[in-house]
Length: 294
Image (tube, rainbow, N blue to C red; front, side):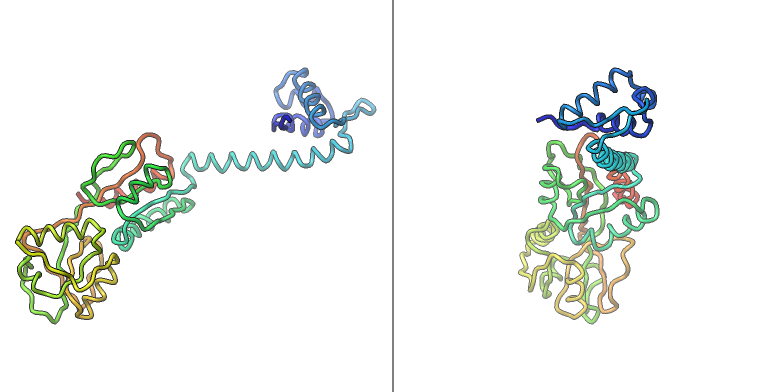
């Protein structure tokens, strides 16, 4: 069974508005035979006359009136849908789906969101807390638009991965401890430790930093939530190795930060699909690039 096209409904509504095939043809910029064909096809599809001619004027039949009323709503909905899509194409509104770790979400992403709220308030950012591998997988299958991922990463077909930030990893130590001005693997390995979850790249970096000096300490606890780790440090439960972004507020006064010797860096990249980038996604990328520190 053939569907009713919007073009045919538009022709019927135009005839109802103008009371004439000829006037409807002029309003729609169609040839008169085309208007007649549209109505003939609609009547064939409905199985009943849709128009009647009385005293030189064309009016909808009773069935035609119902279809005209429904047709107006369908055409208005279609126009609204096109307007909404056009606004998204122009970047005036839209949605961007972003995946990132809790570390990036805690301090870096809110800065970009604040900029977007001021400059592009109709763009909705949907955030998922994911590991870097989960983020890349979901970017590849199209369920994310942007990812903040730990570097380095191997190339992924169809994705663009660019360096974004390089932030120093610092020792976060309870303030009542006696600690050196620069923290070494030897000193830290002898302390109670609170480290990142083993599934994270920071955990692997930390293990490599200790291993290079011949140490393989066992942490008291492993977490994947930096603010919770800092709370435990403040309570004196142990020391931690965490990245510190330059714009992040200073930690709790019960915590002191110390640089590492040798230095250790947390590197992050921005990933998105190659090719066409929607304007709403590009606005989010632009706001993130403003936080670039490589």
